Length: 223
Image (cartoon, rainbow, N blue to C red):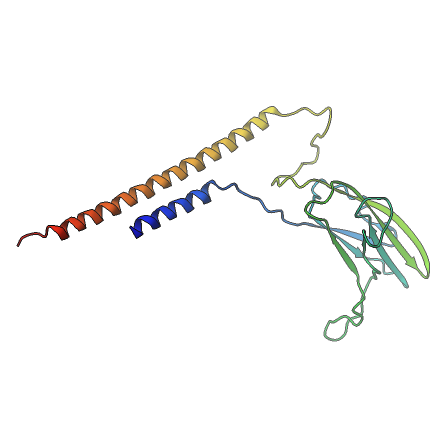
């Protein structure tokens, strides 16, 4: 009876694993923003591959003497900077002094700052301001980051793809994708059923062997 029960448990677990939907975890990607004496090298960031959950790494690369930079990101997208609601990189410099062990001499010294968007961050354009201070004189630049929806697709949009009104829909591609999904689902169900049949056959075999053994014990062979 114990073998029978264990076999049914294994069959149930196998079905759960096979029939469970596949979940694709989002892999966080980091976009590097280089800041020089003339501003942000890449300009506005509108890469469609930048989605919810990704991070932005702001790097200070202005080696002008007595120069610092600060980045402020409008997280709540209200058009103004609020210290309690938005992101502030703090003061960034081009280089930090290290001791003989490679440790920061000043723990507050920073050459970069990172902001990671939430997995459920609001879709749309986020403004960030770069303030450059040189010998007490401040200049600034406005730039933006476009955050797209994370739709968990392995293949992102390709250059030249058409989006929005006026673009033709490729019904053939969609139909083919639906057929592939249907075939994969059918294969999983068939595999699960085959596994269950095998488990039942194994149980019946075990019960048959136990019954034959019991019969031999009741009616021992005469010598």
